[in-house]
Amino acid sequence: MELLSLDAWRALFAAPLTPAGPAVRVTVLQVLATGGLLWLALWLSHEFERIVAAPALRRLRVEQARGFTVARMAHYLLAVVVFLLGAQLVHLDLGAIGWLVGLLSIGIGFGLQNVTSNFVSGLIVVLERPIKPGDFVTVGEFAGVVREIRLRSTTIVTMDNVKIIVPNSEFISKHVINRSFRDERVRLHVPVRLTHGSDPDVVREALLEAAVAHPRILKAPEPTVWLVEFGADALHFELLAWIDEPEDGPPIRSELNYAIYRACTARGLTMPHAQHDLHVKGPVAVRLEPLPAKERLPGVS
Image (tube, rainbow, N blue to C red; front, side):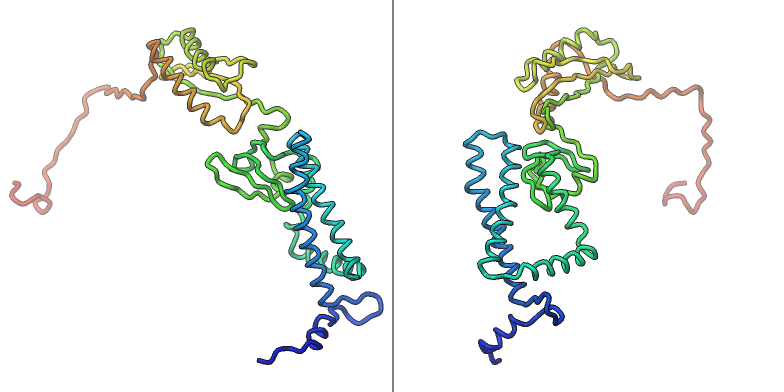
């Protein structure tokens, strides 16, 4: 197979992609240069954010969420500046770029609505900060810690260290539970069922002892115990205690359950076992009939 000559390559790159006309002329080379400059601008701005901006903000002791917003906006601004400077250096016709943007908008109208929606939602998330890295959030059926916010998606890490990639539009168009929004304190509800006849004051003492002894339970607000319900087979209590690290709620609740069991056992409090009583009102007549000969087992008369 014969390779193309240098003149053929030049003709290929100089071939116009737009209809002939004096206004705007877009060539293959301009399209390639635009894509290359855009990639270079994004890469340089990302490296600037990672190597320069983020460490500088940490040294200045800027709040993590505010520092993230500043670094990310610097990333986007630097990408635009690098792209425009690169376009000037290679003498790229910005009018042609405008034509490409117009062509891209037609593509967006037909098939890139989700990409555009996630892009705009990413800007809103970065500017308004309804969530920020480190927040413990619940989106749909997923709950975890926000690890990274990008233009198109956000990464959430669950308690099982599973990375969930959530489109940014989910944070704008749907209900999101942010347990770390402005105040990271959350209240744990630990239900406890004890047999009828248990002294409620002794139960309260046992449950509060377990909560106060736990080092992760906040002293203020103080933990409290509710007698929730008189059940059919048990008394339903609930221990309410506050913590300031929402992502650690499940392990802390488990540790409280261990402590509650030990405290209740030490005081002779017992937990009910499921049981059912069967009452027969009277004798039941049972009529027995012999099986037909063909259904009897061999040797049985």
